[in-house]
Image 1: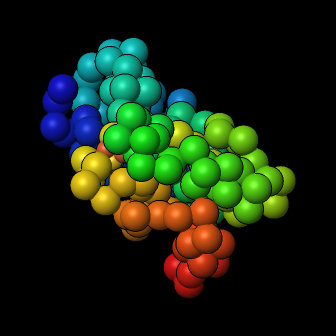
Image 2: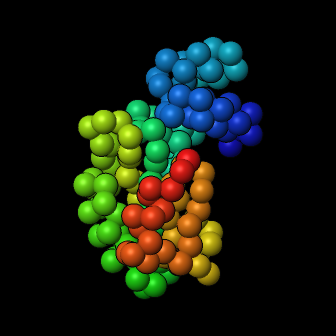
Length: 135
Ligand code: FES
């Protein structure tokens, strides 16, 4: 994967919260490569989105180490706190809830991310505190 494409997609995703089709086409023209290649990169990485997201994105790790460390109860607590299912964005545009594969910090499972912040050893009791932290 071309590092330049990933770097530019990262900047777009951070600036707009997602990667609109118009930005993919603009980047394709600038880099003189097919838009399909850029769209492929935009959809390959789970930290990118090609659909609009909420102001804050909650990602919960769904891989086995997090699951066996009590992840199911944390997952249920997140769903209850946000009143969202994975893949949904709240009506007020404040929150998006997503599942993700391993975040690389299995030693502190279960793990969730809120925007760029990673939280480990999460318990159902800590979910509300994490979601209401200043950011
Ligand atoms: S499996 Fe959850 S962080 Fe690795």
